[in-house]
Length: 207
Ligand SMILES: CSC[C@@H](O)[C@@H](O)C(=O)COP(=O)(O)O
Ligand SMILES: [Zn+2]
Image 1 (cartoon, rainbow, N blue to C red):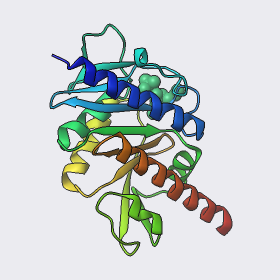
Image 2: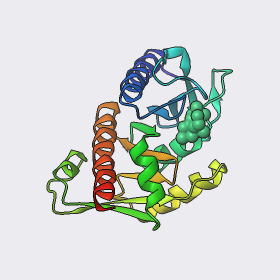
Image 3: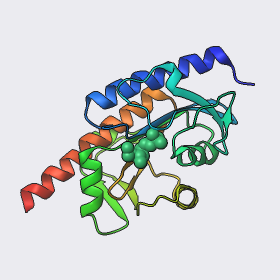
Image 4: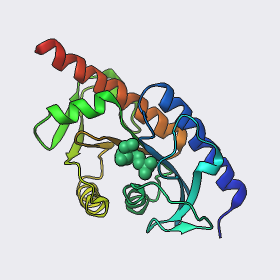
């Protein structure tokens, strides 16, 4: 059974996040999806195809870790399973945000390899557990595909082997990141968008 008052609070947090992320230009044209954990087996996720700058709690639904709707007739995000495997991977993850920013899209297309290394940025410290700019953040880049179940398996396998990963990119598609709760996850996505914008500006300056 879903705790309905808690669902309402999580749904509102998702709507508020959407308004912010859309206003930043990171979730255009119905792209992106967001979620927040409800309990050990369920999470709240955006309904597929909704405008992320105009979300109301009716645009958020409960699903189980297989991505199946619970107490809803709506269709969950097409990328629900990418969220589900993150909640399955680590039980301290409380929220997941996915954006489609210009920086995330372009940088992941320009990077031919399978990872983007961020180093020597002070803002790396916005990530939980990072205390200095002197380390590296490694963001794996997965090739884009419409086979979300396959991509979910690929991301989970990678994350199980690299548990320190703070986020990942899907090439030409966008960013996924997570945190203990929505506030921390918003801090992570905002830091990532800043760092990827810096990477994009650097690539431009060097060309
Ligand atoms: C509007 S194109 C973007 C979609 O294909 C998808 O990548 C996306 O992020 C949103 O899908 P959704 O099913 O609304 O969660
Ligand atoms: Zn997407």
